[in-house]
Image (cartoon, rainbow, N blue to C red; front, side):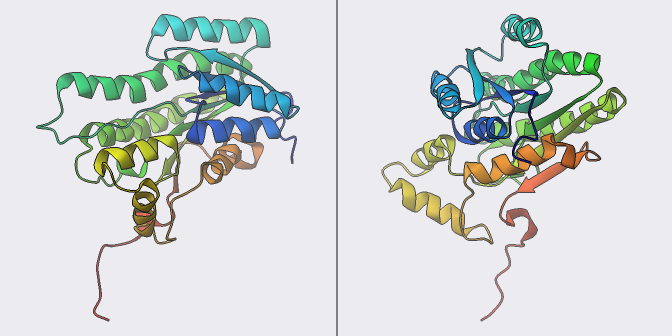
Length: 264
Protein backbone atom coordinates (compact mmCIF):
# COMPACT_ATOMS: atom_id res chain seq x y z
CA UNK A 1 0.00 0.00 0.00
CA UNK A 2 2.94 2.33 0.56
CA UNK A 3 3.44 2.58 -3.22
CA UNK A 4 -0.23 2.77 -4.14
CA UNK A 5 0.40 5.90 -6.23
CA UNK A 6 3.49 4.57 -8.00
CA UNK A 7 3.66 5.85 -11.57
CA UNK A 8 1.01 8.52 -10.91
CA UNK A 9 1.43 12.27 -11.34
CA UNK A 10 -0.29 14.26 -8.60
CA UNK A 11 -0.83 18.02 -8.56
CA UNK A 12 -1.43 19.81 -5.24
CA UNK A 13 -2.46 23.46 -5.30
CA UNK A 14 -1.74 25.55 -2.24
CA UNK A 15 0.93 22.98 -1.48
CA UNK A 16 3.42 25.27 0.22
CA UNK A 17 2.02 25.00 3.75
CA UNK A 18 -0.58 23.44 5.97
CA UNK A 19 -2.96 20.84 4.53
CA UNK A 20 -1.50 21.19 1.03
CA UNK A 21 2.06 20.52 2.17
CA UNK A 22 0.92 17.52 4.22
CA UNK A 23 -1.00 16.20 1.22
CA UNK A 24 2.01 16.61 -1.07
CA UNK A 25 4.23 14.70 1.36
CA UNK A 26 1.65 11.94 1.86
CA UNK A 27 1.12 11.38 -1.87
CA UNK A 28 4.86 11.39 -2.53
CA UNK A 29 5.45 8.87 0.24
CA UNK A 30 2.98 6.58 -1.54
CA UNK A 31 4.94 6.81 -4.80
CA UNK A 32 3.36 9.72 -6.66
CA UNK A 33 5.40 12.29 -8.55
CA UNK A 34 4.05 15.44 -6.94
CA UNK A 35 3.81 18.86 -8.57
CA UNK A 36 3.42 21.55 -5.90
CA UNK A 37 1.65 24.67 -7.17
CA UNK A 38 1.67 27.83 -5.07
CA UNK A 39 2.67 31.48 -5.18
CA UNK A 40 4.41 31.03 -1.83
CA UNK A 41 8.06 30.13 -2.37
CA UNK A 42 7.84 27.82 0.64
CA UNK A 43 6.52 25.34 -1.91
CA UNK A 44 10.09 24.91 -3.15
CA UNK A 45 11.09 23.75 0.32
CA UNK A 46 8.27 21.20 0.40
CA UNK A 47 9.29 19.81 -3.01
CA UNK A 48 12.95 19.78 -1.93
CA UNK A 49 12.15 17.85 1.25
CA UNK A 50 10.24 15.26 -0.78
CA UNK A 51 13.18 14.78 -3.13
CA UNK A 52 15.61 14.61 -0.21
CA UNK A 53 13.47 11.84 1.30
CA UNK A 54 13.77 9.84 -1.92
CA UNK A 55 10.55 10.94 -3.60
CA UNK A 56 9.87 12.83 -6.79
CA UNK A 57 8.54 16.37 -6.76
CA UNK A 58 8.80 19.75 -8.39
CA UNK A 59 7.57 23.18 -7.39
CA UNK A 60 5.96 25.63 -9.81
CA UNK A 61 5.25 29.18 -8.70
CA UNK A 62 1.94 30.22 -10.25
CA UNK A 63 -0.92 32.64 -9.70
CA UNK A 64 -3.88 30.27 -9.90
CA UNK A 65 -6.24 33.19 -10.48
CA UNK A 66 -4.67 33.81 -13.91
CA UNK A 67 -6.07 31.68 -16.71
CA UNK A 68 -3.04 32.11 -18.93
CA UNK A 69 -0.70 31.12 -16.09
CA UNK A 70 -2.75 28.03 -15.21
CA UNK A 71 -2.99 27.02 -18.88
CA UNK A 72 0.79 27.30 -19.25
CA UNK A 73 1.40 25.14 -16.17
CA UNK A 74 -0.87 22.34 -17.35
CA UNK A 75 0.48 22.52 -20.89
CA UNK A 76 3.90 21.94 -19.34
CA UNK A 77 2.64 19.02 -17.24
CA UNK A 78 1.14 17.40 -20.34
CA UNK A 79 4.31 17.96 -22.36
CA UNK A 80 6.88 16.97 -19.74
CA UNK A 81 5.00 14.38 -17.67
CA UNK A 82 2.32 13.00 -19.95
CA UNK A 83 -0.47 14.67 -18.00
CA UNK A 84 -1.69 14.21 -14.46
CA UNK A 85 -3.64 11.48 -12.71
CA UNK A 86 -4.46 12.97 -9.31
CA UNK A 87 -5.40 16.48 -8.19
CA UNK A 88 -5.84 18.07 -4.79
CA UNK A 89 -7.29 21.59 -5.10
CA UNK A 90 -6.33 23.12 -1.78
CA UNK A 91 -5.44 26.74 -2.56
CA UNK A 92 -7.47 29.33 -0.68
CA UNK A 93 -7.58 32.24 1.73
CA UNK A 94 -9.59 33.27 4.79
CA UNK A 95 -11.02 36.75 5.30
CA UNK A 96 -13.33 38.15 7.95
CA UNK A 97 -16.36 40.46 7.92
CA UNK A 98 -20.16 40.58 7.93
CA UNK A 99 -21.83 41.50 4.65
CA UNK A 100 -22.04 45.15 5.71
CA UNK A 101 -18.32 45.14 6.45
CA UNK A 102 -17.26 43.25 3.34
CA UNK A 103 -16.39 45.38 0.34
CA UNK A 104 -17.05 44.11 -3.15
CA UNK A 105 -13.29 44.09 -3.66
CA UNK A 106 -12.82 41.79 -0.65
CA UNK A 107 -15.67 39.54 -1.82
CA UNK A 108 -14.01 39.23 -5.22
CA UNK A 109 -10.63 38.59 -3.61
CA UNK A 110 -12.00 35.61 -1.68
CA UNK A 111 -13.97 34.16 -4.59
CA UNK A 112 -11.06 34.60 -6.96
CA UNK A 113 -8.63 32.83 -4.63
CA UNK A 114 -10.98 30.10 -3.43
CA UNK A 115 -13.45 29.41 -6.25
CA UNK A 116 -12.06 30.79 -9.50
CA UNK A 117 -8.65 29.23 -8.88
CA UNK A 118 -10.31 25.85 -8.33
CA UNK A 119 -12.45 26.24 -11.44
CA UNK A 120 -9.44 27.12 -13.60
CA UNK A 121 -7.35 24.28 -12.18
CA UNK A 122 -10.13 21.76 -12.78
CA UNK A 123 -10.83 23.16 -16.25
CA UNK A 124 -7.34 22.31 -17.43
CA UNK A 125 -6.62 19.28 -15.22
CA UNK A 126 -9.85 17.41 -15.89
CA UNK A 127 -9.36 17.93 -19.61
CA UNK A 128 -6.12 15.95 -19.37
CA UNK A 129 -7.71 13.28 -17.17
CA UNK A 130 -10.64 12.88 -19.57
CA UNK A 131 -8.26 12.04 -22.39
CA UNK A 132 -6.84 9.26 -20.19
CA UNK A 133 -10.35 8.18 -19.14
CA UNK A 134 -9.14 8.06 -15.55
CA UNK A 135 -8.40 10.37 -12.64
CA UNK A 136 -9.37 11.53 -9.18
CA UNK A 137 -9.82 14.98 -7.68
CA UNK A 138 -10.23 16.21 -4.10
CA UNK A 139 -11.33 19.78 -3.37
CA UNK A 140 -10.76 21.37 0.03
CA UNK A 141 -14.00 22.95 1.24
CA UNK A 142 -14.77 23.58 4.92
CA UNK A 143 -17.31 22.90 7.65
CA UNK A 144 -18.27 26.52 7.03
CA UNK A 145 -19.93 25.40 3.81
CA UNK A 146 -22.61 23.92 6.11
CA UNK A 147 -22.59 26.01 9.30
CA UNK A 148 -21.05 29.46 9.61
CA UNK A 149 -19.44 31.24 12.49
CA UNK A 150 -20.12 34.95 12.75
CA UNK A 151 -18.33 37.35 10.44
CA UNK A 152 -17.12 35.11 7.60
CA UNK A 153 -19.70 35.83 4.90
CA UNK A 154 -17.33 35.74 1.91
CA UNK A 155 -15.34 32.72 3.14
CA UNK A 156 -18.42 30.66 4.02
CA UNK A 157 -20.09 31.47 0.70
CA UNK A 158 -16.96 30.52 -1.22
CA UNK A 159 -16.70 27.16 0.55
CA UNK A 160 -20.37 26.47 -0.13
CA UNK A 161 -19.69 27.18 -3.79
CA UNK A 162 -16.87 24.62 -3.77
CA UNK A 163 -19.22 21.93 -2.45
CA UNK A 164 -21.68 22.67 -5.24
CA UNK A 165 -18.85 22.69 -7.78
CA UNK A 166 -17.69 19.29 -6.52
CA UNK A 167 -21.10 17.74 -7.08
CA UNK A 168 -21.49 19.25 -10.53
CA UNK A 169 -18.04 18.09 -11.63
CA UNK A 170 -18.68 14.59 -10.27
CA UNK A 171 -21.89 14.23 -12.26
CA UNK A 172 -20.36 15.61 -15.45
CA UNK A 173 -17.21 13.50 -15.43
CA UNK A 174 -18.17 10.12 -13.98
CA UNK A 175 -18.50 8.83 -17.55
CA UNK A 176 -14.90 9.94 -18.16
CA UNK A 177 -13.68 7.65 -15.38
CA UNK A 178 -12.93 10.63 -13.10
CA UNK A 179 -14.01 10.80 -9.47
CA UNK A 180 -14.39 14.19 -7.76
CA UNK A 181 -14.92 14.55 -4.01
CA UNK A 182 -14.48 17.24 -1.38
CA UNK A 183 -13.28 17.40 2.20
CA UNK A 184 -14.75 19.71 4.82
CA UNK A 185 -12.20 20.18 7.61
CA UNK A 186 -12.95 21.78 10.92
CA UNK A 187 -10.16 23.70 12.62
CA UNK A 188 -6.73 22.47 11.52
CA UNK A 189 -3.44 23.67 12.99
CA UNK A 190 -2.07 25.42 9.92
CA UNK A 191 -0.40 28.78 9.30
CA UNK A 192 -3.80 30.08 8.15
CA UNK A 193 -5.45 29.08 11.43
CA UNK A 194 -2.66 30.77 13.38
CA UNK A 195 -3.11 33.89 11.23
CA UNK A 196 -6.82 33.76 12.10
CA UNK A 197 -5.99 33.51 15.79
CA UNK A 198 -3.96 36.70 15.55
CA UNK A 199 -6.76 38.48 13.66
CA UNK A 200 -9.60 37.58 16.03
CA UNK A 201 -7.57 37.83 19.25
CA UNK A 202 -4.67 40.22 18.68
CA UNK A 203 -2.11 40.09 21.44
CA UNK A 204 -3.48 36.87 22.93
CA UNK A 205 -1.40 33.73 23.26
CA UNK A 206 -1.75 31.98 19.89
CA UNK A 207 -1.59 28.46 21.32
CA UNK A 208 -4.24 29.26 23.91
CA UNK A 209 -6.61 30.61 21.24
CA UNK A 210 -6.15 27.45 19.17
CA UNK A 211 -6.65 25.24 22.21
CA UNK A 212 -9.89 27.10 22.94
CA UNK A 213 -11.07 26.51 19.37
CA UNK A 214 -10.12 22.86 19.80
CA UNK A 215 -12.37 22.57 22.84
CA UNK A 216 -15.36 23.44 20.63
CA UNK A 217 -14.80 20.16 18.76
CA UNK A 218 -16.17 17.04 20.54
CA UNK A 219 -12.72 15.43 20.23
CA UNK A 220 -11.34 18.34 22.27
CA UNK A 221 -8.64 19.54 19.90
CA UNK A 222 -7.96 20.87 16.42
CA UNK A 223 -6.77 18.53 13.66
CA UNK A 224 -3.22 18.05 12.46
CA UNK A 225 -2.65 18.64 8.71
CA UNK A 226 -1.41 15.05 8.38
CA UNK A 227 -4.78 13.73 9.58
CA UNK A 228 -6.55 15.60 6.81
CA UNK A 229 -3.97 14.43 4.27
CA UNK A 230 -4.84 10.81 5.11
CA UNK A 231 -8.43 11.43 3.99
CA UNK A 232 -7.20 13.12 0.82
CA UNK A 233 -4.98 10.14 0.04
CA UNK A 234 -7.86 7.72 0.61
CA UNK A 235 -10.22 9.63 -1.69
CA UNK A 236 -7.58 9.81 -4.42
CA UNK A 237 -6.80 6.10 -4.16
CA UNK A 238 -8.36 3.03 -5.73
CA UNK A 239 -9.70 2.20 -2.26
CA UNK A 240 -12.34 4.88 -2.91
CA UNK A 241 -13.17 3.55 -6.38
CA UNK A 242 -16.98 3.89 -6.00
CA UNK A 243 -17.01 7.25 -4.22
CA UNK A 244 -17.72 10.43 -6.19
CA UNK A 245 -19.69 13.60 -5.55
CA UNK A 246 -19.26 13.18 -1.78
CA UNK A 247 -18.11 15.58 0.91
CA UNK A 248 -16.11 14.05 3.76
CA UNK A 249 -16.15 15.95 7.04
CA UNK A 250 -12.82 15.91 8.86
CA UNK A 251 -14.03 17.91 11.81
CA UNK A 252 -13.60 15.97 15.05
CA UNK A 253 -17.39 15.76 15.37
CA UNK A 254 -17.93 19.53 15.15
CA UNK A 255 -20.97 19.42 12.85
CA UNK A 256 -22.50 16.45 14.66
CA UNK A 257 -23.13 18.31 17.90
CA UNK A 258 -25.94 20.59 19.01
CA UNK A 259 -24.88 23.57 21.17
CA UNK A 260 -27.29 22.60 23.96
CA UNK A 261 -26.18 22.58 27.59
CA UNK A 262 -28.11 20.17 29.78
CA UNK A 263 -28.46 20.75 33.52
CA UNK A 264 -25.77 18.93 35.48
